[in-house]
Image 1 (spheres, rainbow, N blue to C red):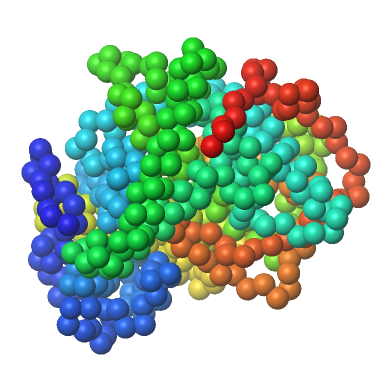
Image 2: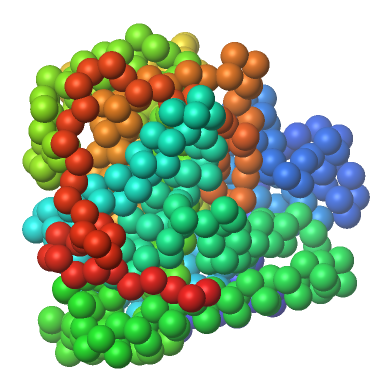
Length: 507
């Protein structure tokens, strides 16, 4: 990729580590390097993140890898990451994997370069959409979508069937962000196949990861067919989102959700508004990031609950105690599920579904007083290894233990050691939305079902820039406790908290 510079003079695009790390030779790398290929002996194209975790265990808290002549520096030691979290010296770096998504999302919140003005504009316009008052308004719709999931699982339980956990969590989280944020119904639970949006999204994420595994000059040749499919996937994503936006404009507005904010809200200080092109990019960003990572987090949490019946029993008892016979828990009751939240946090510790984030030096500096970095030099933080640093998490860091997140243990840990949502000003804007949704769903499922695993299943993690347990199926069994009343339905289907029906798509 050709390197250009931003208005501030910082390089944009890929920058090999030897250009920014004056003492790169001091950072260890794997043995058996090959000319041109680098450290690719035994490397897997399907699981590059898990490859890097293996090297991290061997090489220590900072190391480097070479692929086709490009040098990458990886960090995970807690003291190094704490230093990288200093916003006066470091900023988000749009790394290679994220930059590969820019043909899809452009200068959306996740993929924007730091110098691009639309990031700050969109952040300031959309941030109020994740304040407590707005979150409480989304809660009713979250409940309605969760009921679609439990209807599906009730039928499976009655028939003695297993359920596809990652597939169902993807349907759930896509419908949740689509309805709460954009008043849109993809009809995921009524489909025998994934919605075309999901199929196109998986295609673009997978293609972005494949681009990392081939030399950039050869990518057009080696990935010609894949590139054509990717272009078709991007066109489909744009088409679906444009339909959602057209429908909202035709309706004359919604209920003040994220899409209304994108279309109608001006920046409180400058009066600027998002352009039509940037609205499309933000909608894609929220639909992809707003469901892909949360579905993975829920899937991993359900995996661990099924494998640790003692933890599940404790969490289930908490739900029964806090929610009692309430038909539909209210917004405040979700935050009271402290052990359920600890289960979620511990799952995110072991398998953060956004498994890395990149940081770049905002000026010449020395990382942790040891490694000089020039302005613009960057490193990729391996979040799963940060979350397994034995100096922070102990010798048993690989063990699943939600009590690591009780209040006393959290206070005793140094800051910047738990980073499932990134760090700093560019951390995930929707993290509270995701945590509320996931805690609510786990509570509802624990209250309603016993979940039996396949004894022969062994956790396999699939990678498409995000992480997901592969092939996870569970057998739900209805609990013998008395059923609680169901949420109100109308002849036209479940209604939103405001009573407005949600719009479907013909795609």
